[in-house]
Amino acid sequence: MVIGGDAAGMAAASQVRRLRPDLDIVALERGHYTSYSACGIPYLVGGDVASFDDLVARTPDQFRRDHRIDVRMGHEAMAIDLDARSVEVRDLEHDRTFRLGFDQLMIGTGAKPIRPDLPGINSERVRGVQTLDDGCHLLAQARQLGCKDVVVVGAGYIGLEMAEAFHRWGARVVLIEGHERPMSRTLDGDMGDRLVGHIEKLGIDARFGERVEGFEPGQVITRSGPVRADMVVLGLGVAPESTLAEQAGLELGSRDSIRVNRRQATSVAGVWSAGDCAETYHLVSQRRIHVALGTVANKTARVAGVNMAGRYATFPGIVGTAVTKVCSTEVARTGLATAEAERAGFEPVSAVVEATTRAGYFPGAEPMTVKAIAERGTGRLLGMQIVGGAGSAKRIDTAATAITAGMSAADVIELDLSYAPPFSPVWDPVQVAARAVAKLV
Image 1 (cartoon, rainbow, N blue to C red):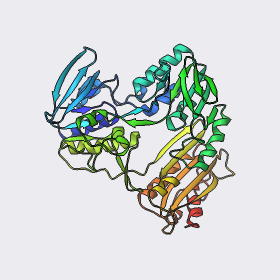
Image 2: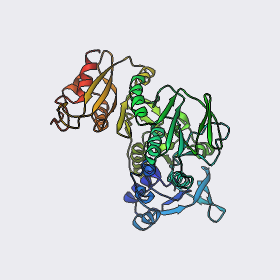
Image 3: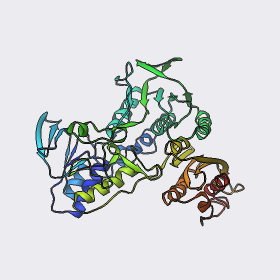
């Protein structure tokens, strides 16, 4: 049995089916969609993606027909009885409850948007965006209201992407963030400062260091006064949806995510978990962490599926690579930020360089800023961050590969990377940053 019909749940179910054609597989999903890209919702709102259907990788019917997986839509798991090896299920359409037994259980309940306890936050016009159902409701409401004033609360990944989406929609967008800079949990302050200027150039009214105190019809109440809002989008991050697991008695880990080992096994035999509801392992800090990313969900779910099928697989861990953009400005990071490195017991040194995406004389060269973080003494590369124009962000993958391999900044300098003026300066900016930080170790 699989609880949750998105990336982790259905990736695990599909993997089980590939390896074990003899097993009966039941998947429970309380929403209306399976295997969809929640990451694509901001681009649907902004007009880059034409239809909700474009975000669905496989429909319930495709899973039933092509994979013989009994997908039950509109069915919510209400409770797990680990002693009886059964799940209490609510059929939402027919308003009935029944029990289903299992031999192996996969929990892929995902994450939920953080909603602080503020007056008016439960208003229909204050919305989080986590599931495709959320996206459907948000877009339908925006069209119905003809939104002209949108307030986005939170300047993390989702907040920035939704601010861009409604800016492109044509709305007046106010971005409110309690911290002094955007992406404060993932970027160092000096890199966040560079992003602020790009946001303001777009015409987005960005208010950093501002606190929201509540929501009223047509406005958001802040410490500095009310802000007009036809709609409010919450971009405050997500928390693991682990309530069902906790109530069943499963052990929780980082940020109350479901504790799993390298095989994605929970604290109870025969029960597995992966995706946004489960914890994972950071290869650099060597700590268990919670991170909500589609890449991690799919990879960990594949491991869970292999083990559920009676085979053997482990997930080695992550280095925290992520990327986003705000209109033409790209942002990327991998490894540890400076504060994260310090908390993990490292003594980090860092260097910031200014570069271009192509040879400086070549048409279309965009400016980019790269920050490299290394361990004092050993020179081991610990992290890298990039803010720049088109063609900047995907360079983070070079750094992610180097960090995964445990390479030093000096090692990165010697990598045989490609060069031609339309693609890069003769020294790739990642190597320029590595050379700068190598001088400091």
